[in-house]
Amino acid sequence: MKKFYDTETSFADTGDRKIAYRSYGKGKPIIFVNRFRGTLDTWDPLFIKMMAKKFNVITFDYSGVGSSTGNMAPDIVIVAKDVKDLADALKLNTIIVLGWSYGGLVAQAVTLLYPNLVSHSILVGTNPPGKNEVPFEQVFLDAALKPINDFDDEVVLFFEPKSQISLAAAKASHERIHKKIDVKKIPSTMEAFQVYFAGGDAFKEDILNFREQIKKTKIPILIISGDHDVSFAVENWYAIVNEMVNTQMIVYSETGHAPQHQYPEITSKYIINFVKYAH
Image (cartoon, rainbow, N blue to C red; front, side, top):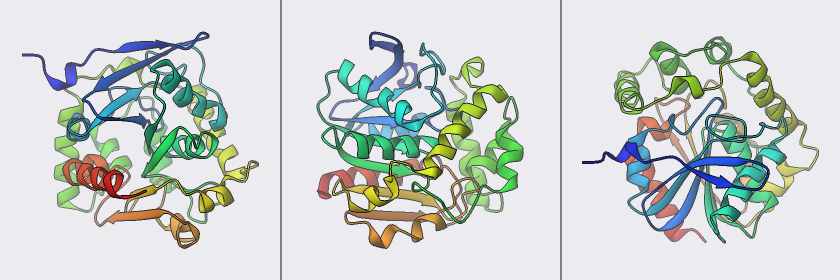
């Protein structure tokens, strides 16, 4: 019997490049937008499986990453076009966008640049546009920039090392993900890392004034964070969330940068109910 995580990779031809993607389940389409160094293989299969019970979950590789052709741009506005082009290629008129980490920055750009495409925006383990007060912790930089990350790095990067609950969840999630993963496709060079960081730096400069736009958008936004995220501190949302007009926020205690991997079942339920009731 074919296992859930054996879903085959397909390719959307956008004309100038081919975007690798996988599709799971039926329902409203929700496009998962990946983290720094993320590929099709680095989402937790249990989270995908739970979400695919209610949605058509679409995961993809950025241009120039993993199995996609082309080149990744150092500008998140251009990276956001991957989502738009993928939706167009799949003939999707309306999508839910879910962005994790760096992908949360991309998801915000998609939400603000293509408001007629996005019905709901889910932002996981990420930060708002513009200047944020709480920077990356050094432990993130120490672990994130290694050519290959081991399990101990994953605990630091995505979970809460001081919590036994989080450590147990880290082990379970790691085992699920590593049932099928092509490590060779994960970006591993400093040159590739700099492209991500350039995009993040431009997002902070915020020349398009996304910080003010996201406060005003009426597209429903759900923010999901851990209370101790070493890369995108949840505290940075507190400066603007009370100025946003259609936003809800969930913060898990004893949780790091990957709340959807620590708590895949309950996170899926929160998202499903948010999409059902938030308009």
